[in-house]
Length: 271
Ligand SMILES: [Zn+2]
Figure 1: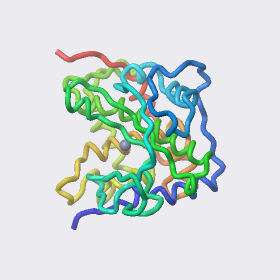
Figure 2 (figure 1 turned 30 degrees about the horizontal axis):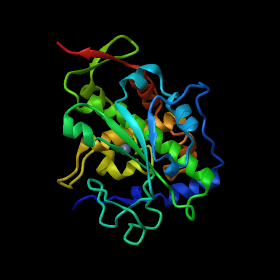
Figure 3 (figure 1 turned 90 degrees about the horizontal axis):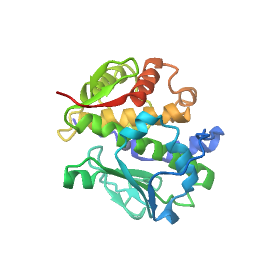
Figure 4 (figure 1 turned 60 degrees about the vertical axis):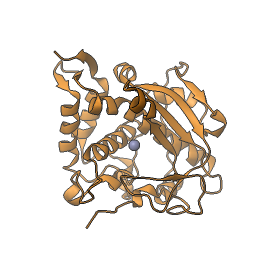
């Protein structure tokens, strides 16, 4: 039987936990402008200065590796009720949604990369429905989403660009894909770091599924981007209050991995 664990697409439990947990965002203290264009900012519940302060949480080497081109605001969106883990379907209203709280906060768009072959990405941040998400909670959701998607603009090249080599902080050279598989091995020793990441795990916490459409690289990438968000925010909603507030308590080696991966420098082409 196929795994159809798509409850991670419903933000309801996450929103409730955010409301009750008294969380706040730790921004970068760097006072620099965002080096990217923001389009349709009227839809984005975060000011450009907030986005800049989140962007500068990332170390220089990670910022330089990011293939981000621009940030785009979009009207409200939900996951359609026929969404699957491999095929999430966005729709502009809640009538046909998986549930009223199956809202989409953010997305990373690699269409141009697919069309041109040149690595690039846009981050899409969606307007959040006011009746479901109070403004301060919306800021937490969008901050998490922005850091997660920014993570993808750094992680995806390591997966998919040929001859991608990272020089780790200890000086070792590591192939990008090998670095990702190393992360997968570490991550499989633990349950998913967040409720959202749980959508992509199979039996015994493995990145596998009976679903023929399942792509392990997608699952690994989602777990890593959720781990990157947890690293900067200090929380990751996973259903367990204690672990949500201290997401690396049971996995210090993953925190160390995230630190090293983000501080690694692009070593250039192999050969
Ligand atoms: Zn993602």
